[in-house]
Length: 395
Image 1 (cartoon, helix red, strand yellow):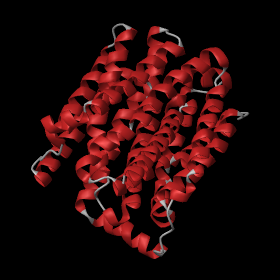
Image 2 (cartoon, rainbow, N blue to C red):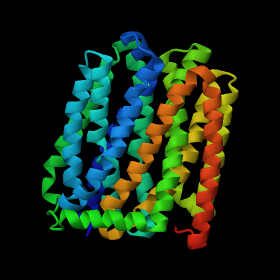
Image 3 (cartoon, rainbow, N blue to C red):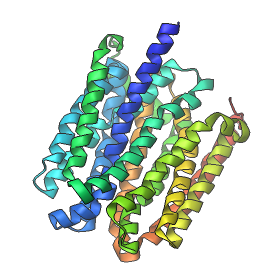
Image 4 (cartoon, rainbow, N blue to C red):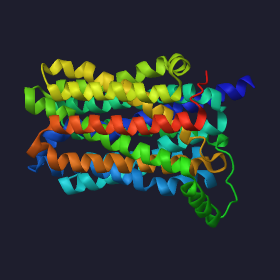
């Protein structure tokens, strides 16, 4: 039993490293936007497609990876996706034009899409529900650090080494993760024998159930609101306060620090607040951080405001994730992949709309609209949680 526990911890650590690379890849272009605008001579909206197309491809391909994970083994599919991400990151590094870069970013999103949802589903298979939220929070440390690294290092590379090297670093991290995962390929397990028709029926059954639909709608609007704002924080600070891209990347990087704070105190917060309380308190934190960003002041205030945004986001999102892993235990990979698809489709939609309106109406309006949407979405989901479970917290 001790050996199995140690093996599970090693696997979770490797999956967390993969989540780090995926999150860094997801957010690296946030701080690169001004450099891409200058380098390719394009508009901010066109450069922002490197973000929205990544998220769009990431969301759409979940429909493929979920059933593949259930059929062929979650860890095997993750290892394959990490390997493919090496190639797509190198392609982005060598892109000769903005169209090529957008294409490779879309391919990167499609390749990396398997990592987070199938890792979460694998943890759901291995960890009992009463310990799952805390375990998922520890696993998400990799993603949180990836958010910090992606946005901060994106600015550093843009200012000092050139934006292309940011993708070279991502390729190296993916490569190290892929080698380590394939080295333990004997633990991937055997493929399931269920037919594709059975998987389609499973998807239909999940979609017919009211609780999964509630979770999918909630995470769509959460992704829409939060990431429509998060993607434009470096651009907002660079334009409004004329700070370097390196310094502008510090603020949204603090988003991950807020998430790490949540991960450290997950059990205590869950016991004290319960799931519905976490959602409400998280929304309050997010709305406060977004309102502060809209108000302006000194650019350094954006660092604690972004940290507060990250803390609130993970309070709400981790609760959504934990519920998603329990929606359909028999087809957990498919269920969590549909959850992730809803989230990233929301994120892509939010970034696309924000990129179209950020210049004509200003980023402060984007931040305030996002704050209002977060409050409304969280209030509806918290009420649904209380009605479903009576808000019983688990330690």
